[in-house]
Image (tube, rainbow, N blue to C red; front, top):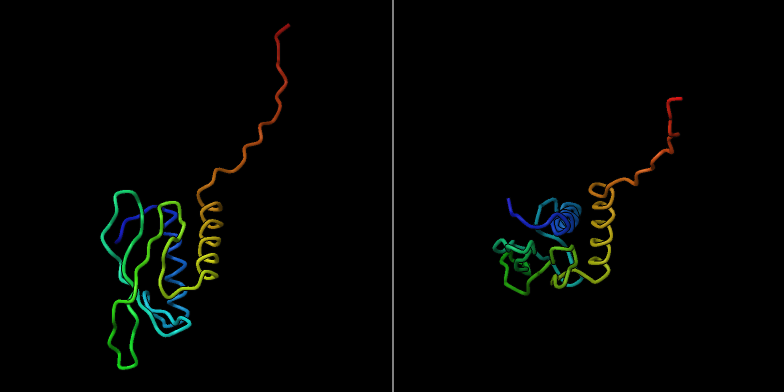
Amino acid sequence: MYKCSVKAQLVMDQVRSRCQSDTQTNNKWTGRSGNYMYIMGRENADGKATGVVHKIADDGSHKLCGSFKIMSDGIITRFTGLSKADWNNFMNSAEAEYKSKYSEPATTEQATEDKVAV
């Protein structure tokens, strides 16, 4: 399995769910100007998720058309074939999921009375 930061992985999970809804695969989706697929690149020590994007032709062949980069903090800086609205939806959903899963709940300390022996 590809290793990246938790936030980057949550964004990739959002992309993967889009692919599942569009094409029932883990790495292909339908964009505004055709069908695309992503291929993960090398793992990055700093937690980024990176790779390339191919555009799928009508005959089933595919050709390199761009790349993607998701920073370790979950910010998409580049993802060919996905709209900015998609980027924002994926980042917002991933951030909400991160907060619900990994944020510490607010602790409420109850006031206790000091008991002194008399």
